[in-house]
Image 1 (cartoon, rainbow, N blue to C red):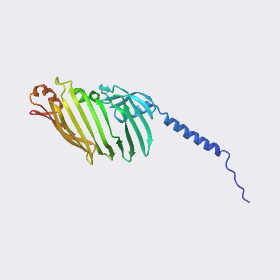
Image 2 (cartoon, one colour; image 1 turned 90 degrees about the vertical axis):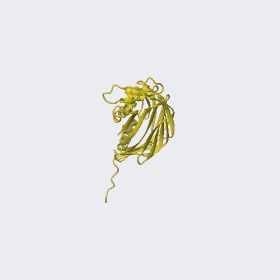
Image 3 (cartoon, rainbow, N blue to C red; image 1 turned 180 degrees about the vertical axis):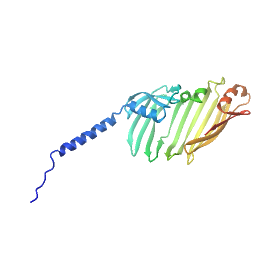
Image 4 (cartoon, rainbow, N blue to C red; image 1 turned 135 degrees about the vertical axis):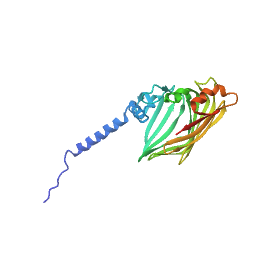
Length: 263
C-alpha cells in the first residue's frame, strides 16, 4: 500500500522567505533616492541636463534644473526655482508630472513608454513660460548670443516616437520668443518670433518673425533623427549698421542677408 508523503514542513517558511524578499525589493525600489534619478538623467543627456541638489525619492522629489554644454563645458545656467516631479507606474510605462514655480505653475503630464528599439512620449496639452537666458548654458552658439527675453511654449496633442533610428511626431507645439535681446547687439529688443512644430511622418518646423528689427524666417524637417533647416536673417530698413555684427555671427553672409543652415 502506497504511503502518502506529507508536504515538507519547510514549505511555509520558503514562501515566507520569498514573500519577504519580494517585499524588500519593492521597498528598495520605492525608496530609491532622488540623486539616483539625477545620475540617470545626467548620463542619458550627456551631462547637458542636470538635476542638482536632488531631494526626495525617484517617485516624488525636486531638484535644481541646470542646462550645460556637456562634459568639459564651463557653461551652465539654472532655473530660478526648483523643478518638482511625481512618477507613477502606468500601463507599459511611466506617468510623470513636472512643475516649477517660475515656469510651469500648473503641472504638465507626460506618459513615457519603452518599446523594442525605441520609446514613445505623450505630452499633455498645456502652456509654460521659460527665461531665454537659460539657453546660454547649452554652449555654442547660445553662450555667444547670451539671449534675454521670455519663451512661451504651448503643446497640443503632442506625441513623440522613436523607433529603429527614426523620429516621428503627432500633434504640434508652438514656441513664442518675446522681446528677445542679445549681448552682442546694442539694439534692444531685437524682436519677437514664433517657431511652429507640426507632426507627421517627417515632422516640420517653421520660423517666422512677429515684430522687430531683426527679421528671421525659415523652414525645416526631420529626416530620420536629424533636423535639416534652412533660414535667413536680415535687418529691417535703417537697422543694418546696428545689426551687422549679429548677422555675421548667426549665419553665412550673403549680401544683406545671413543664411542659416542646420543639418
